[in-house]
Image (cartoon, rainbow, N blue to C red; front, side, top):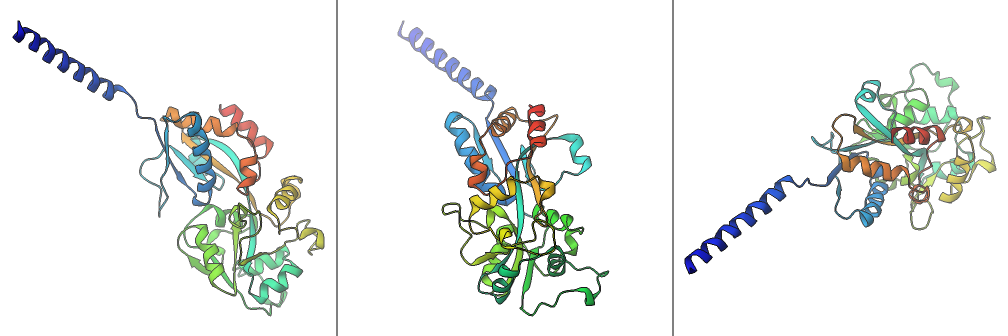
Length: 309
């Protein structure tokens, strides 16, 4: 009788372990991997943290982009217009816009002069782009020393910046810096005559809403009349910058490149948890965008997000 009971217990234990193993095998892992443009990581991480409050069983991780994208990922974050061939296989969610502004080390004589004078379109092109068709006699005389810093690798901000002014990234002149946009900011802060172009969200302290210590954001000719007046010098407070850029139609804004930040997934092999996370993002309030230095997406792109859902 004792032997029979022991045998029943052993068989029952084996059966329970087998059922447990089968359950573990069948149960899908709720993991979402995100990669892409690095300057968007703080905003994406905030969304991940908020999403996990109501979806704690989903593990969403950001895998940093190196010289290329990781071999496997579910969501790709990019900061320039998708290429035509990519649009065929991927679905895009346009979640924000970012603006690009010229900056200088605040110790530079250049910063002191041009924070007052400002930059018009011709001067921006003269400072940042190599153009063999421009006559030297037509260029402005710049007495103050400066050194331009730009990105080495193909990236969203330099692509958007150069395209806006009619060039390609390879046409940007200056010292090329490897790494991310944050490294451009560090280069400018290290060099007392450094200047560059950077996304708005990197230029302000998120806690104070003030420009990052050590830089001067250079005002530009926003209305396109060829000069910079006092009304166009409003870059000392992030909330004011966002308000001024959002109150106008994007077509009315001059000399400030603005592009959409978008998240995309494969159309045919999408992770269900990734889709759920993207849909959740498109329903979020714009307060997160403003806190992190982004503009809300244009209504036409917001409507497209709804169509994707």
